[in-house]
Image: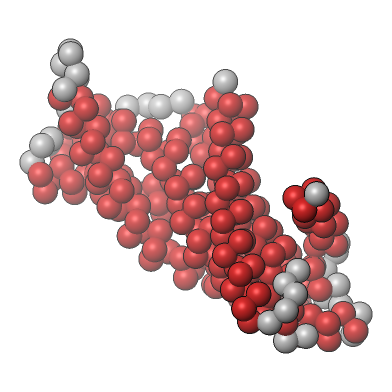
Length: 248
């Protein structure tokens, strides 16, 4: 019953979130602040993680190809690395990373406002607090997470390139040739569809847990942990569902 109740409360909260913002100027300022807090501040982590995982993926592809029962050209390392990054690593793994960083920040910031009665004060003044607090986060995530995934793709490919230079296992020209092999256009659409869905989950689930905190600072920390856990679980489950629906 607890899960069903949470789903119902989450749905009701989303209805209030997507009501028209009361003042455009206030919404615009909030949106720019959230883009900085949720997006720009995550660029370094995304770039660092993607670079080294791209290197690891390319090395694993090379080793697997070398142990195959039939010869596989070295340039397929570049192609395979590109496809793995597009289909799975960048949209899914980076979203899980963002669920930890961004999700905990959202839940704790809104939760702190709840326990310090700032949300109650806003509601007394007639402010639609879900729209005021959560909608800018949702829009910022939907906009900037796509940019983060593009940065992740670039850094992952660069990581594979430098891994070849560092290990000497394959030539740079072969890696670049593999990158130039045409892959289906739908792979890119698939990547950004998943990114958009995951961005919505990352923004709304932690907001729900933060908004419904009851108690004090201890409960804020507890709900922040729950927010990260359930956001990650939903991303993984949604990833399976989208993969079955879109790639079937």
